[in-house]
Length: 226
Image (cartoon, rainbow, N blue to C red; front, side):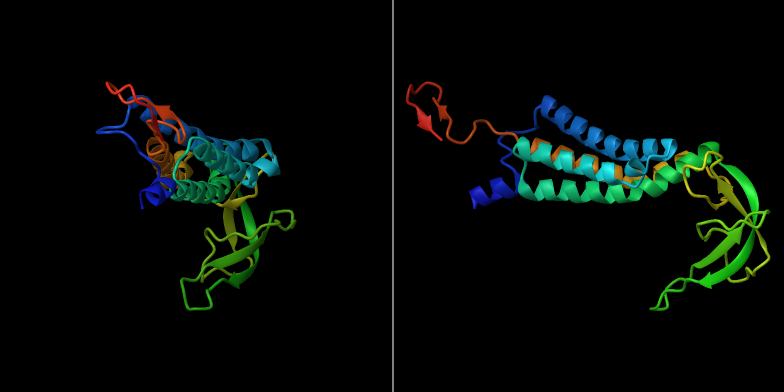
């Protein structure tokens, strides 16, 4: 049972509070992992690099964090939890990065609704209407808009959308009071959970001695093979 506990949850061979440097190492690992996932998505959206903006680089960062936790000897369950949280954050980051780019440099323009699709779920869940739109020149946009598109919306109605003047992120429906900090708040719970998971994994990875190391207990002079 002790072996299973150690391999699954980590050895945590310390008495009382964990060493401060161990806590600092765990915080640094979590912050770098979360920052890498969010930062690569934001950089990709800002510069128009799909391989970064789509979250693929974020998944690589999540995998790198899991490899690091495995290298320091963290418990398997905690490694899996941290990897899962990292993947969830990587999948949420692209939409948030798009919102931050549009909030920072987006321009609001008026478009015309060409068709409305009822996005009601098959199980009777909350309906979401999707509007196909075209700009003032009649050129259809490649994405469908759901913000501002509702049950009362009809073809020919005007909608306000915010678009990137550099065309590096897709447009979306304009939202009153949108700020750069808004998408970051949506990612904050996932990032905080990832940092906490990495911190716990690193702290519980602490060993007084490595398996197979010869330790001489103080005052005995006799080796103890562990």
